[in-house]
Image (cartoon, rainbow, N blue to C red; front, side, top):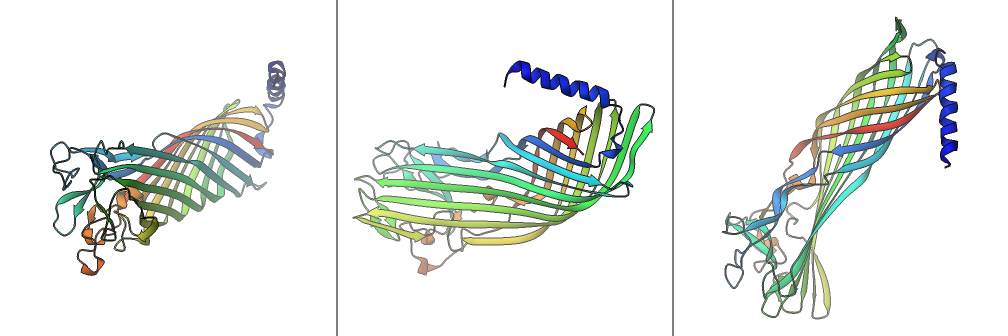
Length: 398
């Protein structure tokens, strides 16, 4: 767009606003606001180590890469995923009755998904050693599944994570004071009550691929896999949190000349439906065959499938905005918002590192008929959650 044309448009808007700035806002009873959101979310956390490296302590590998060994280093896990900025939008619309007895308003927001991915590779000879640390459920000892090891296996591990968030609410407004004047300051104050919905989704995937070298031996369903066989292991942990609840709140503001300071506080109480889905597979490409079997390393029949629960949760929200009137019909907005949820489930917190090796398809001890400890097990681990950031937008009044 030509700069001179843009300046002309802004000049016309400013002149229009200066002519009509003193017109009462009382007739403007319908509004639509559109905002761009620049948000930060509480990162998806994993309090468990997921990948290690270290020296090959003995030729067979043994406990190489296990936690507690000298020189074992954690490469992934014990960390936050999906840090950084989330971009999105929010739309708000409402209407107030002519006699100021009540009104209605609703809003919807959406943040685009944010994802991260980490890949760790060995070279063709298996350096460096890569291992996935677990606890042997039968003995309680730290051990590890080798992904790569010098002269035995070459391999790679990819750890991916994605987070998305959206939600909305609808409310009835109860004006207590609308257009109340005090000298040059106009005040308004509303009570509100309504319903809120929130949707938080997280995915965590761990994919490994191992190539067996001439001196190495891997296993698939208890059978040996020799060079040049390839073994793949996939663990997929997903969580979905959906909040449904009743809401109350207040909205208040002060207007002086063209400027308005607006504040909104809401709190919702209701049910957080938490769903965790754990799935895994192990595959092999060996002797011209491609086979896949259920179960990974951190996912087995003992914790696999879908798990759901409903838990009482509180979701408060606060918003503070500065609004500048361009014309009685057009307003620009700049604000800060924060949203909080008292309890959500996130995938990194649902991991059980205790593993019964008789249920792991890549273990030399694989034999499901032996039974034993039901691990990895599933146990709910909840945490709180927040989303906060800056909102920039434009509002239209009718």
